[in-house]
Amino acid sequence: MLRLNTHREGWPVGLLFSGQSQTAAVEHAQACATLLAIDEVNAAGGINGVPLVPRQVDIGPQPDDYRLAAEKLCDEQDVRVLFGTHMSNSRKAVLPLMESRQALLFYPTLYEGFEFSQNCIYTGAAPNQNSVQLARHMLREPGSRVFFIGNNYVFAHESNRIMRDLIEQGEGSVVGEDYLPFHAPDADLADVMARVDDLRPDFIYSTVVGSDTIRLHEAFARTRARAEGALITSLATNEADLSQMSADLSEGFLAAAPWFATLKNPESLAFLQGMRARFGPQVPVTSGAEAAYFQVHLFAVAAREAAEATLEAVLDRLGTACFDAPEGRVKLDAVTHHTWLWPRIGRVSSDNEFEVIEEEKNPVKPEPYMVQHSFGDVMTDNA
Image (cartoon, rainbow, N blue to C red; front, side, top):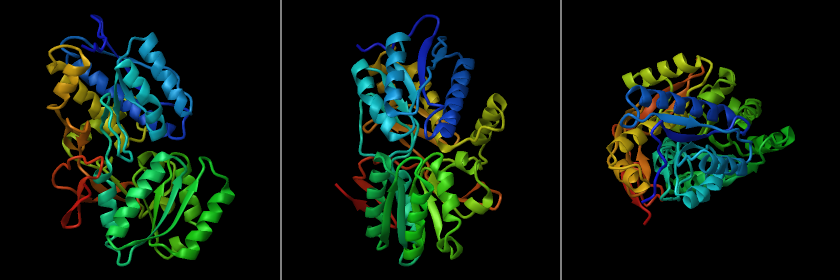
């Protein structure tokens, strides 16, 4: 049996979020949401009377920094349950350590799919829970023409590969594809926007992340394509990015996510109230933060029901655990270790906030390998 290292005085759990990374603003919100959920779990009696004890160490900006942090948490602080990482390169850096230490990582961020680890629970959206819905929306534009712009790392390349398949399947076209290094020079952004103006796409599909997102919107705002009605769409841009932009840069922008901060159901409102009361109104709350929040509660439900504090017992109970999350009731798919989620499309209003313009009526089963997904009115089988 693989013990998860509980102690009489508390169950140590690790947080893997960096304040120095490309996506530090989003990761800060995810860390806050994790701590809020831990507080709520402990206020409800912890795990059968044992409180969760959060452990954190400083994490630098590079993927290997996350691995080193996870190693310290596991080897020096006796942690075997960890919540976090954000970008795919940091998750991939950490997973081999999770597997070697027989620890369990809860990963709260949308990603490119096509992955499974026995030691990872994926609570962010898989491609069939956001890429499919965003592509379907773009393809309502007759002859939809899309230009891909991304940062040069694994998520951008893989997400663009999936999106290209979907766009071409729907008889749209990808008219251009460019990748930029993180913190790309202004001249590189200007060169990409010159191509955009030459090709006149209907949409920019952005896999640019973090602080580079604001610079992308600033550069796009100066183009003729923007003046003629072209729009930026993304899976990764969120409320943290909007907080750093004015409405003249963001209005009309489209995103796909399971949750937006404008949702008014009771669980969503309570989550927002809890975040603001605990951390202040200045913390932008994102879909990644919502996943970071509910995954702690899912873990707590499973751990309370497990016969013992072992990896096998907790994983077994996670397969049946449910939680009324801010987006709606969520549950784990035990086969894939991914989560049933509620896809939505948000459009940025003149108030610089997301207005939900489309949403699924029921949670969508995760298909991380895109074996079968609903596209339009038909089921597409890619087995």
